[in-house]
Image (tube, rainbow, N blue to C red; front, top):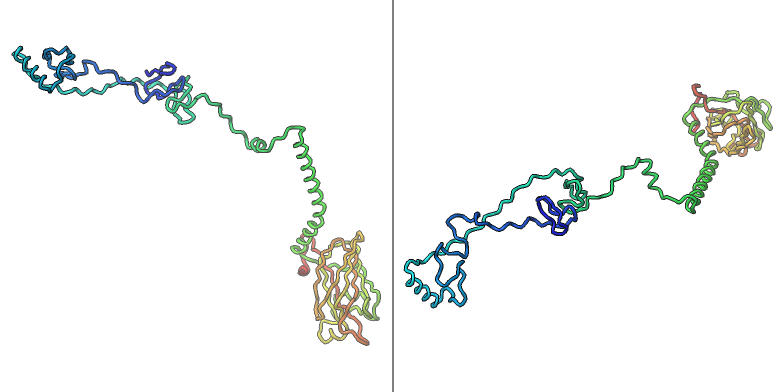
Length: 359
């Protein structure tokens, strides 16, 4: 056992630090003095001569007496000669070789079971009851490690805690209220745009079908060329407008989504007959919804035979009006010819499309 020099507590041989006060115990215990039994036989300990051979006038133990001459001097040599003459049996003895101290073997003590907590710093196991580690002297009485919190509680803990009823709580409530108001206001403002985008996407991806008007009227027309000829499906018949500013109106009993209009100008698709009369190049489009909301648009047409597509994308349409603003090929005895007007809606789910979607 190793005894602590600070507090006197007993420690095992393998401990470097005291388990009671943490004081350093040293690398090893001091070696005991060699006993007579450790000296090899036939050797003389240092400082002693041969047994029974003691110089005259010298005390036992080989220590020179006071006032004796130092060895190796002339006086010491004369003294040795006088001693030999006085005692013929006295002979010179060769000094003995100094004996090397044998290493002291300390008995090993059985390792005590280290059933205490391991050191939190170096991990060395220690006996129960120790307050300091036997290897690094770190305190063993640590605080208990708290169990990890669930993920939902850890997220709540990461937020800044505000005292209930304090100014921070009031600011947080105001910020949340402002965010809610901003979300509601933004939703109201963006809802029409989002709805229009949704409808246009459906118009592009879905098929189309032709919608026939329930009635067709004109502000003015020439005999033999009524406004109804614009929806009869025949290419050699047309509505004859006598002058600029004349208009034709198409009415529908059932509201529908108008995604496009197909317009054919001129008296006929044949190039020679096409240029026989004036052709509309600019039309004013007025579309009325069922709730009375109007939609106005200016249509600019090419002065060429064939049909021309105009994209609209208006819901709940009940009336469409076309007014002639500009025309090409006008002159004396010539009237403005508008051949065909075809209205297209988005086809219902499962219904077959009758034509391409206006692009």
